[in-house]
Length: 435
Image (cartoon, rainbow, N blue to C red; front, side, top):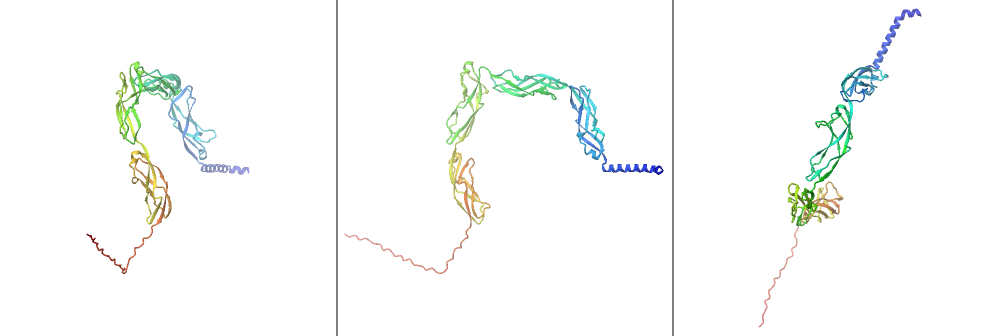
């Protein structure tokens, strides 16, 4: 036996080698080794020293190419791969760091390449500052008014961020518009961060982001605001009424001596506006009736734009209307019950006074209807500006009957007997007069 093994040892070894090769080839054909590129692999920054913060990073994800059997590649997700750059010991500034990657030990795959192979990081030290909020007032209050010192709550805010950005901030401010105001302003506003040139500064955290601002506004002495009262005279045309009277501006500012200004009523009248016989809107500029030694400062001219809306009185009217049939199938005859309905309409009184039944259509649509009895709702067509309040009754019974056949006129034949008419003349009687 030993002798046989010695004589055939080479063949045995060769057979084992060939068997191994065959097994490897068969295994590779069943589960071939492939390469695959994994996109969007998250890139971590590790060991960043305190208080450093990243200002900019050239790549947030990388592409990693792996080689492994196909069955293994199918089990790998981008999150399985760990990619990172080591930021240990970095100082403020811009740095180029190599990207590293690895797989869990239990994943039998080979790392082929990483793209990009390097990442540029810009880092800076984090800094915190406290700033007093300033208020920028835009515009002026109305003439005769004065703004007091603004009140801000809280008075300060804290900013935090990269030192280079925090150092750029020179002002934490809010803006309040006082243009034309006659009363104190109360607002909650977002704080704006500005550099020395007044430009916005970004990349800085702000706490709190909003503050409450109060700007007291008071009226100066010798000034008063008075409501405008339009003085009317006359009555509109019959059937019309005045629905609205307005003036623009509604308030005027006047100036007078201290003793006189306090004695003025709370309003200032216009000169008289006549509405006698009006049946349409009135729009005109009317002067104010200003008392002596009183000056109107707002508006600049002592007059206002007056608008008077004149509308017709609303009324109602009842009319009896016969329906109009449309869409009747040829060969049918409609029988309506009732043959007329009552309409109640509402609208301007002058229009209702001239309204007649022939100005209204009450349509019954018989399209597609066949022989039989039907209940239909009539559709009213009324002049513009009028409204149908109700239809009595709301529906009409329509009975559709076949059109009766036409009966021919009989023809007379033969000789009809003629009965002569005898006319007896009347003899006139001459009266006799006796002597």
